[in-house]
Length: 496
Ligand code: G3P
Image (cartoon, rainbow, N blue to C red; front, side, top):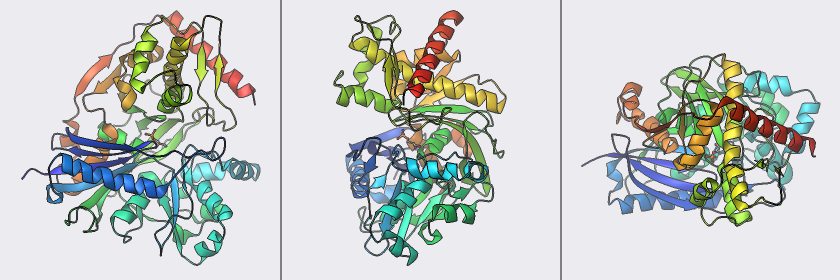
């Protein structure tokens, strides 16, 4: 009977299960959106139980829909929204607070305090990250500081914490395994990415007991199996884990130093493989672990844009300008340009290269003639401008010119955006046939662990181009548009 790999892609707004075959093709997909909680301006939270239920549901449904049983699944790969943390009670298995989402700004004050105490260089030297509410460490501290009785329980060893991968593995294994992988650990602000261990000094500063932290494992190995009562009785190996952006880099087969991918999801994340060198950034990028496989750790340089696809959701759900996100392309094409309108979607601050968590979204250049088409187009274009900000920082840090950009994620089906992206970067953009590269990367990591795929060379051969987009905009226009964007960002940052 044919065997498959099941990828569980637990993203910021939805959970998906995707079944892949040996050619790396999508056989079946199942998706479920879940509730976003915004308890205060700038705060974003999820119900960790709802995440777990949605995960189990999509896994079951994808199997039913494709009429396969669990013995036909050679392994499960998990990829997840990164940095989002859950703290749960070891005995009851219940989260003690909502999961605090990567986008959430509720630890702003903690971060400001850490900065004022002069810790920026220390954290950056050990973790490759910057002190920002984005990362997990300050979120765990916030939960322990704000939930009644939590500190006490934590010091008695009754609480566990972890990113979403840890939470899901713990649930899938029936509470047996508390693990994470290198790529997820590297986003916590507590993991030393050079010494490959939880850093005593940093966890002390954040006041997080080490007993709460998961064991850090390679990104591809058999961690455990699914608890037999969960998926029709047959325990399936859970054998691949990576944070979603690192998984996308893996799924895009960016295995050589200097290869770059950009994923357009809730946010937009560009990663460059830097091999075994952890390149330190002087332009606002992050140094992060791409994956650890067979005892070898590889690193990446990362540019993180917090709001990309979620700005399109805002057009749909907040402003109600569109019915569905795919309507954007038609609207954007109805006008020749935005006529000078810029949308800076800094709803939760700005990441790379600005790292300003106080700035908020702004719209510039409105005239009496501005209508919804201009606003929609400007919101789409903001994804391309933010990507250019990141690419310029990346080229400056790595000292090389990026000659092609591999793209993936939902928005890459938008040909208007891909053309504009190529124009504004002046770099060809390549879209692969399988644009679900995040899930694919997790599937590959799982498949390698159980010899479903032999090695990375075999995987690379599965990568197939769907379409490339070549720049055709003249230089004057490109420079004019981009300098308008920079002016808009500066103005937004000045308005606080
Ligand atoms: O670091 C946050 C990132 O992992 C979220 O990814 O796909 O939900 O935009 P996504």
